[in-house]
Amino acid sequence: MLDNPLSPKSNDAAQLVETDVYASQCKVMERLTELAEFWNQLPAFRAVAETEHLKAAAEYLGVGAPALSRSIRLLEERLGTELFVREGRGLKLNEAGRLLLEAARVAMQQLDEAQLTLRGETLAGPVHIASSGVVTTSYLLPAIIVLRASHPTLVPVLSGPPPLDVVARLQRGLLDVAFTSDPIDAPALLRERLGVETSGVYCGRGHPLFERSDVAIDEIAQYDFVGPTTTSGRGSEGWPSAKPRRIGAIVDQMRIGLEFCASGHFLAVLPDALARADGRAGRLWRLPVELGTRVELFALLRDSGGGRGRAEVVVEAVRTSIAKSKA
Image (cartoon, rainbow, N blue to C red; front, side, top):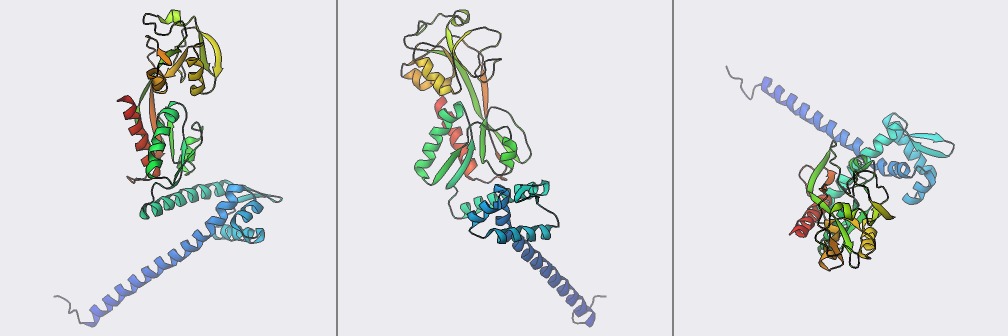
């Protein structure tokens, strides 16, 4: 037998449901209020955590050092744990502090990217990039020039070669994207393959081997090379380690090595992409030997769940730059 919806029993059940819903809503609002208060304390914490210097952080935020110190104490009381090791007047992050700092960096970065997307300003502001070698000079620079032609408020921040802690820096939001030849796999990061780069042996106009089409690798090895700072093994340059050669100059940048080579006094193993323009201009000659060097190029960036932020746009621009150079 069905209950009468107007019976007292049914009314009591409806009131209980309403009470439960109201209680749940109250709990949600209490939690949101608590999170809002916690979020308001994070800028003070991050300023102190990034500088590990109370006075410097206070000057940056435009507040007094005592007030900032109280804010940190209140945050520690809220969390029930200390975030810094206090040594005299110095502050140093402890393990709990480092954990909170990493989470704050990622959260703030994600919110920043979300607000830029909602305001239609995805390609604005700084984009932090780690890159070196042929990717930087031959592909990244042209890609940035193209992007900035349409988005002049985009500010690329280049940090040179991908650091040893590139994975941690990407995960913490200190880097947006890194270009590398290492096939790195890491949680929460995407690895995108951009292409393959080859290298060859080059000489400049005036060198005895310029425009030679019948030279062998044994003869090539008798001439002076400009080499990288590390010449052991195949390495990133590509000369086979089993074949001795003469090193007449050592440089730490491929672009400088190219200029040494173009002088006509040295041979050099150069990425074909780097030497291509000079070869077309008649400054360099690619000798008819194949070293078999093939270096894969990758981009590493945070997994945005299919979103299209500044990092994704830069990667796509570099991919397009690589494709154009091969055409």
